Length: 206
Image (cartoon, rainbow, N blue to C red):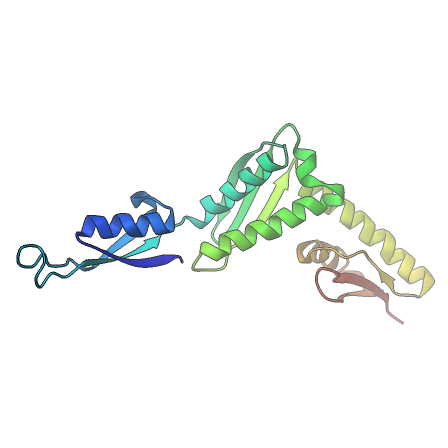
């Protein structure tokens, strides 16, 4: 959390100095008076400056929302963001006329935005928060596609007797395939490689 300690002739002056350094306002800051200072004789002799500590207050979720809206503007695809919160699991639903730009090919742009949004939110949060981005029900459609893909490639692995490696994908997408094939006793699934190239492998059981 950003914070500065500032001094001034008065508490007000010290606070204004700290707020200027942080480029924020009183509403977004937590102000602690360390020393109220002392004017001294004739305002000079024995005087002591006022000292304050100012910390920036952030709402992690609002910072994540602002980040997404800003990205949408910069990409030329203005969006509205709806929040669905369930404890430490946060879902942002994105809508807009050019939302396809934020989804990208096979959801790659959406996945990247999700990763960056999670970094932004957890930078300001005291506890880890899981973030999921969705747009135009993309996640459900993608999950359906992944389940169909999993079943098709599992059959390929069984018929060929060879391992089948899928393309790199985020952990939650790999979990969809793991779950879809969990009851298939003729194959096993495992993840291989390191992010961002970590991928799932379907291996036939001998």
